[in-house]
Amino acid sequence: MPENQWACFLLGNHDQKRAATKFTSGGVDGANMINLLLKGTAVTYYGEEIGMEDTFLTWEETIDPAGCNTDPERYEQFSRDPARTPMQWSNSTGAGFSTSNKTWLPINKNYQTVNVATQEAAAESHLKVYKDIMRLRNSNVWRYGDYESRALNQDRVVAFSRIASRDVDTRSFLVLVNFSDDTVTVDATVFKNVPAVGFVYTRSVGFQGSGNVGSSIGLTAVQLGPRNSIIIQIYL
Image 1 (spheres, rainbow, N blue to C red):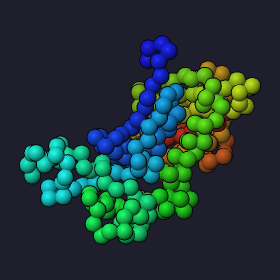
Image 2 (cartoon, helix red, strand yellow):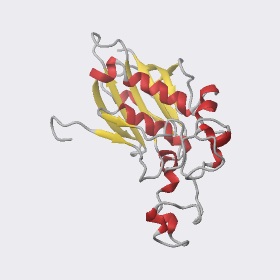
Image 3 (spheres, rainbow, N blue to C red):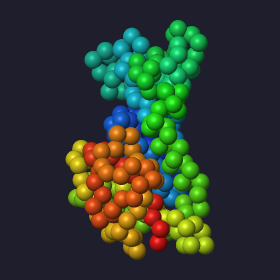
Image 4 (cartoon, rainbow, N blue to C red):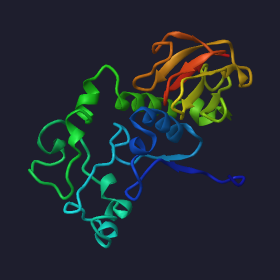
């Protein structure tokens, strides 16, 4: 970024594939962590909070001119409709988006499990992780803390820290996101002044490493399963 300029971050929009389609359902929490916690303005395209995926549409269902102006063999390469289907609020008729039996674009068939109401009620969900991230975004450590980023484990892991001075916040945080399909072990003490032990603030759905939310975790060897991500709270 040029000096004195401000960034704007987004994962997807109405012209692009959805985040859960690009990064997989397992990787969407890590993508949201990066999008919402880097320094800058964050934009969330509707449905990324719950990990909505692109919807397959047949040639007959396609409405987007970019797809319709091609042919049945090539329309999927050009149509933007898959990322534009209705928001999935519940498992009721019309996914809680409409009371009609038919919408302008069809609703994704996974709406009965991937929806806001179901994720609100679940023990863990993309929506709950998203809300955890937003609470951090609104904290003083994210407003005023120092930022340091690194690419670790042969660039498979995106990692960054937000370190706050004591007059701003007693807490500081590490974010570790594994974008690979491999299980990796990360030494998070490569960051400046980071202690050997931290506490799990939140983690991606289906996290395969050690450490439950709220428990302590050793930072010299943090295990991340494929597409796993974690936010660790530390005290300096």
